Length: 353
Image: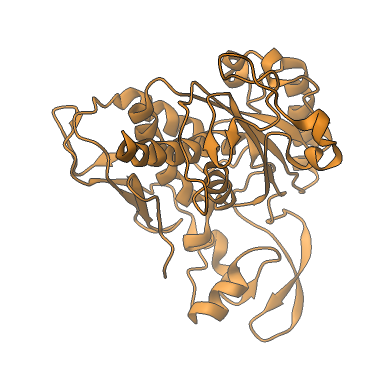
């Protein structure tokens, strides 16, 4: 299986399955001498872990990281950083029925067609549990970036949207509720809706918005490795993501150039920021902001038609511990992937300095 690594200079390779002994990763290219804040890493892992509230999966995993290499006396050595995250709460029996069936909108069928076999326990390698490794690497990437701030938050669940621009939001409120929405009134509506959906055995999708501030001018390459292209690839690699837009996004396609152009101030900043902080694939020093769309979780706790490996259709009800809405737990994953992208470009940009 290819495609288990991301990055050019700051590079993450992950391994492990949802119900295997452990997940793990290797971070290559992290500069030497970075003082590691282990409590900050633990806090990021706590944000992503399952079982943290009543509106997410109740699988209990502490997601404690064991660092194996690359860190000595609290600082990075410049050598590969190896780590593992043990799986401690597997319930593989919940997935025994899936040995001979393929769930709708999961990777079950295509995995088996491509590789000839699959780990049916919780989706194996295709499980979103793999993203724990990304959050661990992203926590280290954030410490490489230092002065750059990355804030993601839930901006919609189903048809419930925050109706304020991000400039009017207090990001410190994001972690004050289970939905991770910085607008308390909207957050309560979202949480009530998710609970209703969960009671019916159904699921719902939503969007995560990410705002990156204090980005230096010059990150990104202007042809195939545009900054927004790499951010898009990183976000679209996250489980359940169906769309990515930055700056004015699809709304910009409805505008005229006279309204869409970001006119300059004398100091090189722009009066508006419909470009989303990126022009010609390169950061321009303004806020980078983008939105990521997540589909409803495919496993439903209600009966559905399912294909068997005998090419018959049967009716089956999903079992196990699943998120009714994945979006709240996706917030730290979006931040982590953004940090990995920026850390990679930050190191690549040093070539020109």
